[in-house]
Amino acid sequence: MQNWILALICGFIAPGAAPDTLVICPPEFESALAPWVEYRTAQGHVVQVLPNQPTAEQTRSQIHTAAKRGGLKFVLLIGDAAPPGASTRTVARSVPARRLPTTVTRRWGSTTEMATDNWYADLDGDSAPELAIGRLTADTSAELTAMIGKIIAYEQNADFGPWRTRVNFVAGAGGFGPLADYAIEQIARSEIASHLPQHLTTTVTYASWQSSFCPDPRRFRDTVVERLSEGSLLWVYLGHGLPQQVAGTTLSERFLPQTIFHCDDIARLSPSKGSTIAAFLACSTGAYDQTRDCLAEQLLRSPVGPVAVLGGSRVTMPYSMWTLGSSLVDQMFEAQRPTLGEVFMHAKRDLAPIQRRSFTSAFVHCVSRAFQDMPSDLPIWAYSTWGYQAVRCIGALPADFQEERREHVSLFNLFGDPLMRMHYPKRFALTVSDSERVLSIQGRSPVSGAGRIEVLIPRHRSQRLANRPHYLPGEEFFRSFETTYRQANQSVIATATTTVTNGRVAARLQFPRDATGEYIVRVVVDGKSDFAIGHNSIQIGGPARRTASR
Image (tube, rainbow, N blue to C red; front, side, top):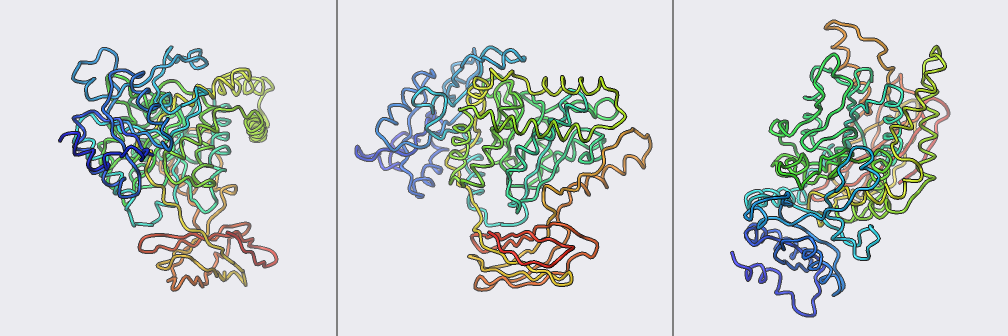
C-alpha cells in the first residue's frame, strides 16, 4: 500500500491543520498501520505519518519540525530499534533509539550507554518530555496488526468486571538480606500501593518463602503466570530484572531456580476478559535495542499479553523507580489523565525535579517500621548490619538523587500506544449506616445496571500474617503456603448483588458477625457502555455512624 492511501486517511494534513499526532512509520508497515490511523482520525485526532529515518538525529528533526507548527501532543514510533551492526533489511523496518550516556547507574553495574525514546519528546533539552511518546515494537506487519487489534479491543471492551478494580503486585526479593529486603518491600508498598484509591483491591505475590504473601514455592512461577493471565487494571513487578526475565528470589536455596518469569512463560498466558497494563520497576526488561527482543517487547507482541508495558532499558535503581511508580499512580487515579501516554509523560515530568522530602519521609517511615518488627532477641550487631544493608539497597548517595532521577526519565520507555484511552469509572457518593450488623447502603449512580456490593478490608489493615521463621520439610508445610497466601490477599469479606434502576442505589447487606474495625463498602455498577463506583468507610464495633463520601 502506497503513501497516498495513508495521506487520504489522514486528510492530506492541510497546510492550516497542524497535527496533534505524529507517527514515524517504516513504509513496509503502512498498510498494517492504516486501520489505526482511521480509528484515531475518527476520534478527532489529526494524524501525520512520516517515513522512518536511518539516524536518531534525523528522526528527532522530523518530530521537532512538526512540533514547531504547534498543537503536537503525541508521537507514535512504529517498529523495533535496530541493534548495533544490524542488517540493512532490519534498519529499513526500524526506528532508531537514541543512545545517551549513563551517569549514576553505570557505577552500579549498568552499561555506559542507555537506549531511550524520551529524547525525541524532550523539546527544550531539560530531560522532561513535552510530548507523550510510545513505541509499537513490531518486526512484521502481522505483529503490528495484532498489536493494533489488541489496543482497539481494550478501548472498546464493555466488560466492567472485577478486573477493572484489581491491581496485582509481584515482588522479587532484593537479595540484600532479610532485613533490608523487608525495607524494600515496605517502601515499595507504602510509596506505591498507598497511593492507590481505597476502592481498588490489590494482591501481592512475593518471592520470599518466609513471607505470608508467598504461594507454594514449588509453583511460584505458575502463580505469576496466573496473576498476569487473570486480567487486572495494572500488573506491577518490583525486583531484579534482565532483558528476557525477572529474577532474584530467596526461594532458590531450597525450592526454585532464580527465574520468576521468563519470555518462555509468555506462551503459557491464557486469555482473560480484560487485558492489563504492565509496569516493570526493574532493570533491563525494556532493553529494546538489543539483538534479541526483550521481555517488554515479547509481552506486547503476545495476543493475550498486556496491552502496554512500561520498562527500563538498562540498570535501574530503587529510589527513582518507587518515585516513578508513585507518580504513575497519582497521574492515573488523581489527575485521571485521558490517555496512557499522558499518564506516563506527566509521571516523568514529576520525576525530573528532585523531591527530597517525599523520599526522606518514606525512608524514615520504613526504617521505623522495620526496626519495630525486628525480633527482640537479635544481637546489637544485627541492627548496624541492617542499617548498612538498607542504605546499600537504596543505591545512590543523596548528592546523586537529582542526576539519578533525571537519568530514569530517559531509562523508562512506553511500549504501547500513547493515545490509548483510559477508561475511568464514574464516581458517586455512597451513604452507609449500620444497625445491628445490617448495613443500609444508599446512593445515586450516574450509571444504571447490575450492581456489585462488596465489603473490603482497608489496605492499611491488610491481612498481613506472621512471617515463617523456620523451614519445616514436609507436604503439610507446603500446603500451608497456599492457605496463608489466599488469606493474606483476601480483602473482600462480604458480597451482595443489586439492580440499579434510574441510578438509584438502595440495598441492605448482612455484615459478618466476627468482623470489627474499619471497613470499606464498595458498590460497582456495570452499565452497557460505562461503569460507576461509589465507596465509603464504616466503623464496625462501637457506636453506629452514618458517613457520606465520594
